[in-house]
Length: 273
Image 1: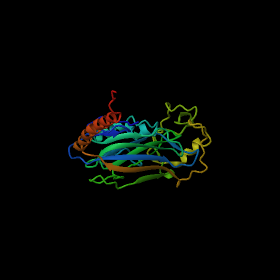
Image 2: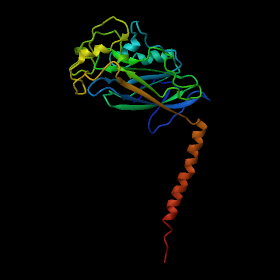
Image 3: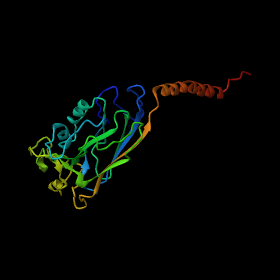
Image 4: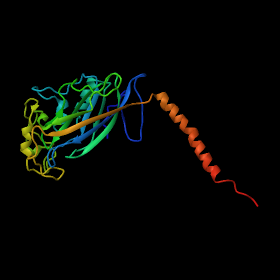
């Protein structure tokens, strides 16, 4: 399922559907994003990936500074309810979306997005690390990942995140009773921390041995700061111009009619003795 901010130049492609929009002559590229949970079994899972293809203006957060509402909406529940509107306000022409659901160890998910590489060459992402109160993965530089060049060529094939790259939003005190993805926890409750954004892999120890919402016991024994835990992979292909698609669609009409005609002829005409 895609989270979309409706606009003429931001379109997601789904299986069985193909749509085009945006300025004439734009370098329209279909980008497929695949996410993988590389973490050891029974360790960290992830909320849906929230992503944006933009021009490098939207800066979701900065290390050493207080977390704003945008990144908090990812870090404290994974919804991105404030992240998407903030991104859209900063970059009205960006393509925004989501990939996957709760991604447990060993799981994968993918989604495809229509991107105008003439203006939206940079990739920004965020996903809540679960179980936790306010841990997440994301990029703290709006221009940290230039995914495409102006011609739509991929410059990055994948992004791999290690456990040591887990961010703490510093917005909520770690408390399993209020955490997301903990059996019996109430993520709707929170105790403010009033801290700043920083790396905090060690905070996961507060959840070691607890039962997760997925039913497995959370186990940190095989997880180290240098463990690969999350991979985002990319593939891209150009999208045909609208006129090309129209010609292709028109060509299918006589072919379909001819097929029906041949099937009818193959049955023959009844003979009368």
